[in-house]
Length: 108
Image (tube, rainbow, N blue to C red):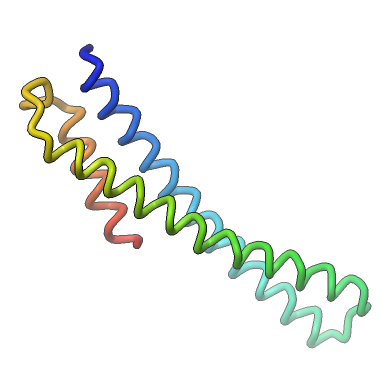
C-alpha cells in the first residue's frame, strides 16, 4: 500500500469517527436537555439541577468544536481526493473516501 493510499485510508477513517462523534454529542445533548426539563418539572434538588445544567452546557459546547473538526476533515479529504493521485484510481479506498465525504456533508 502506497503512502498516499495509506493517507487516504487514515483521513477517511478519521472523518467517519468525527461524524460518529458529532452524532453522539448531539444525542447526548438532547438527552441531557430532556433530563434537565424533567428535573425542573419535578422541582428537583437545586444543587442536582445546577449540576445537570452544567453538564448540558458542556455538551452544548462540544457540538460546535466537533463541527469545526468535521469541516476541516471534510476539506482535507476532498483536497486529497482532488489531488488525482494515480494510486487512487479504481480503489475501494477512493470509493470509501467519497462515500465518507457524502455522508459527512449530509450530517453537517
